[in-house]
Length: 568
Image (cartoon, rainbow, N blue to C red; front, side, top):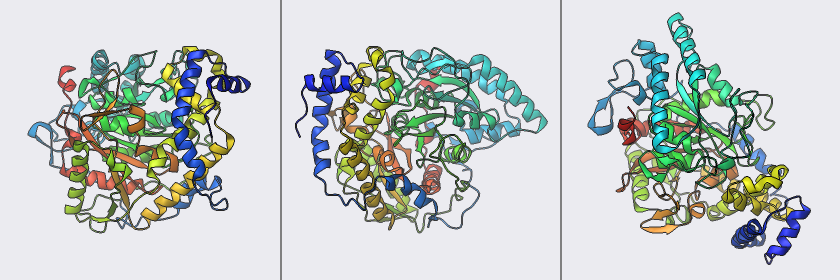
């Protein structure tokens, strides 16, 4: 199939209600032409129509909901707090009231223990967080709206609740919100000049659940435009990385990652369409979770892709991630995809990992990967093996096709969502237009074939999970890309950002499987490296327990970027 020329594409787009200028059409043509090889390969793939009904793609995660995890057993109340863990700069620290760290250095679990012990109060912590965020923003450009008055009032309420003994599960813990997620009374800009003119009338379900649990939103965070645009959105410009401000924090949950990594807040909430929680988590040294599809409601979130989009937390520890997932999961009566779910109760962290089976695929998932990232992955696997885990065979033959086919679905759905505003695409970030315009003229047959491929990819994961409890892969091939061009550097060789960054993360978005990014060490350039634990649907608990076990024995997640001291 030959790619239509610019004139034909412009005519097709106009018939569908998209009137693009010449430069936009030229970008659209270049993008479609560049994706044609992958589209042609997809059309040529054999398919069994009876076995590849696209409806099976949505059913897959529900099928796994009834499959109990085989490791570890029996289930317990949740990851146990770690004690006497190694800290950054050679310090030895412990969680709880005896912790010698400042409150801003604590994760959410540690901060709650400090409140319980009377070592600090929410009003003090929130006041400090607001000051630190203002200073961090001056260096990193991470914040769209600072919610000073709202947060101060909420902190006073949290003080009262702790004094009266009525504290809720996250009472007084500050957090930030990616600005594609609604917060009542605050405009949602989605990082675009086309949004943010009126305040949201209600909070998104995820925000409401966190605030109902006592958490305190202190800011709306920078994001790439509509969570799909380039690193330099017209509204805000690039968000810089706390480990090296000459680098990008990653996207699209870019400001959230920067705020959490800078030790301003213990956690933030973002969205993930192709890696947008896990990629900035990897590049900023955080623990970031893309939950199983259709488990966390997307109500009140600026939509981008019905098929691949999830909402998830960016945190400093696996134990915090487990706590947050337990609060965020479950139906809200509005998101039609989220049905009834069993309560989330991750097993306690065991003394060892005996019986754990991990698959470490090779091929496409590791062939484009910087040496420092490979070293971090190997160190993680070695630590798990020392704990008793067994490395078992497990390959994903179609992994190389997941990224371009996932993008094909995302861009087609994004184009449909933004059709209502097509007359104003001149106000959009040019990268946004170039990316989503690829979906304008996607043939229905190609889109359906992509959804059929999703079913085939899910079957490949089933085959791996038949013999493995977890899949371990690099989260992203490199450390954080350098500004302004943001190409990805692998062993000194530059690669285009969008062709490399999501090589492993799109697997989870396309299939619906959960993925957890966790820090594995540091590269010679001083920036964090990361690996991703992919679990079967609804088995996040396995990944979180393994990550918590690893974090009890390493200090990668405790080390702080240089900006932490500068914003005191």
